[in-house]
Length: 95
Image 1 (cartoon, rainbow, N blue to C red):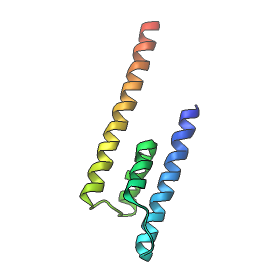
Image 2: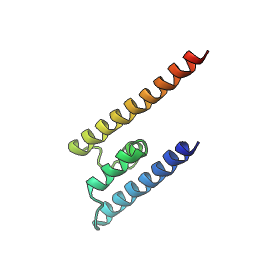
Image 3: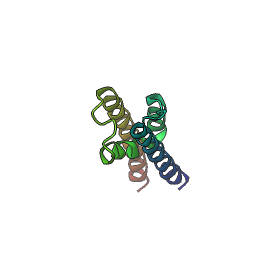
Image 4: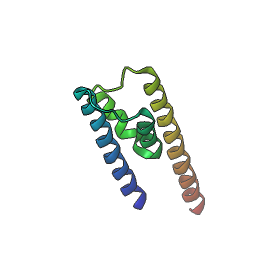
Protein backbone atom coordinates (compact mmCIF):
# COMPACT_ATOMS: atom_id res chain seq x y z
CA UNK A 1 0.00 0.00 0.00
CA UNK A 2 2.95 2.27 0.67
CA UNK A 3 3.94 2.15 -2.99
CA UNK A 4 0.49 3.40 -4.00
CA UNK A 5 0.86 6.40 -1.68
CA UNK A 6 4.31 7.03 -3.14
CA UNK A 7 3.01 7.08 -6.72
CA UNK A 8 0.08 9.31 -5.83
CA UNK A 9 2.38 11.73 -3.99
CA UNK A 10 5.11 11.85 -6.64
CA UNK A 11 2.57 12.37 -9.43
CA UNK A 12 0.86 15.21 -7.56
CA UNK A 13 4.25 16.81 -6.88
CA UNK A 14 5.34 16.32 -10.52
CA UNK A 15 2.15 17.89 -11.83
CA UNK A 16 2.67 20.85 -9.50
CA UNK A 17 6.29 21.35 -10.65
CA UNK A 18 5.20 21.13 -14.29
CA UNK A 19 2.44 23.67 -13.65
CA UNK A 20 4.95 26.04 -12.05
CA UNK A 21 7.17 25.72 -15.12
CA UNK A 22 4.23 26.56 -17.38
CA UNK A 23 3.30 29.55 -15.22
CA UNK A 24 6.90 30.78 -15.27
CA UNK A 25 6.99 30.40 -19.06
CA UNK A 26 3.90 32.60 -19.38
CA UNK A 27 5.38 35.21 -17.02
CA UNK A 28 8.75 34.96 -18.81
CA UNK A 29 10.24 34.21 -15.41
CA UNK A 30 12.97 31.76 -14.42
CA UNK A 31 12.11 28.29 -15.72
CA UNK A 32 12.55 24.87 -14.21
CA UNK A 33 15.30 23.00 -16.10
CA UNK A 34 14.18 20.14 -18.33
CA UNK A 35 16.58 17.83 -16.52
CA UNK A 36 14.62 18.48 -13.32
CA UNK A 37 11.34 17.68 -15.07
CA UNK A 38 12.84 14.49 -16.48
CA UNK A 39 14.10 13.59 -13.02
CA UNK A 40 10.54 13.78 -11.71
CA UNK A 41 9.48 11.54 -14.59
CA UNK A 42 12.19 9.01 -13.75
CA UNK A 43 11.16 8.75 -10.10
CA UNK A 44 7.56 8.00 -11.05
CA UNK A 45 5.90 11.25 -12.07
CA UNK A 46 5.91 10.48 -15.78
CA UNK A 47 2.18 9.75 -15.80
CA UNK A 48 1.08 13.13 -14.47
CA UNK A 49 3.66 15.05 -16.50
CA UNK A 50 2.45 13.49 -19.75
CA UNK A 51 -1.16 14.33 -18.87
CA UNK A 52 -0.17 17.88 -17.94
CA UNK A 53 1.73 18.27 -21.23
CA UNK A 54 -1.56 18.03 -23.08
CA UNK A 55 -3.80 19.77 -20.55
CA UNK A 56 -1.53 22.81 -20.33
CA UNK A 57 -0.25 22.68 -23.93
CA UNK A 58 3.25 22.90 -22.52
CA UNK A 59 6.34 21.22 -24.01
CA UNK A 60 4.21 18.93 -26.17
CA UNK A 61 5.69 20.36 -29.38
CA UNK A 62 9.30 20.21 -28.25
CA UNK A 63 10.55 17.02 -29.91
CA UNK A 64 13.45 16.29 -27.56
CA UNK A 65 11.35 16.65 -24.40
CA UNK A 66 8.52 14.68 -25.98
CA UNK A 67 10.81 11.82 -27.04
CA UNK A 68 12.60 11.51 -23.71
CA UNK A 69 9.28 11.61 -21.84
CA UNK A 70 7.84 8.77 -23.90
CA UNK A 71 11.01 6.70 -23.54
CA UNK A 72 10.71 7.10 -19.77
CA UNK A 73 7.03 6.15 -19.98
CA UNK A 74 7.88 2.97 -21.89
CA UNK A 75 10.51 2.07 -19.29
CA UNK A 76 7.98 2.57 -16.49
CA UNK A 77 5.32 0.53 -18.29
CA UNK A 78 7.80 -2.31 -18.86
CA UNK A 79 8.79 -2.27 -15.19
CA UNK A 80 5.16 -2.32 -14.07
CA UNK A 81 4.34 -5.10 -16.52
CA UNK A 82 7.30 -7.21 -15.35
CA UNK A 83 6.32 -6.78 -11.69
CA UNK A 84 2.70 -7.77 -12.37
CA UNK A 85 3.82 -10.64 -14.57
CA UNK A 86 6.02 -12.03 -11.78
CA UNK A 87 3.19 -11.56 -9.29
CA UNK A 88 0.67 -13.34 -11.54
CA UNK A 89 3.08 -16.24 -12.09
CA UNK A 90 3.66 -16.49 -8.35
CA UNK A 91 -0.07 -16.56 -7.61
CA UNK A 92 -0.70 -19.03 -10.44
CA UNK A 93 1.98 -21.41 -9.11
CA UNK A 94 0.53 -21.26 -5.59
CA UNK A 95 -2.83 -22.58 -6.74
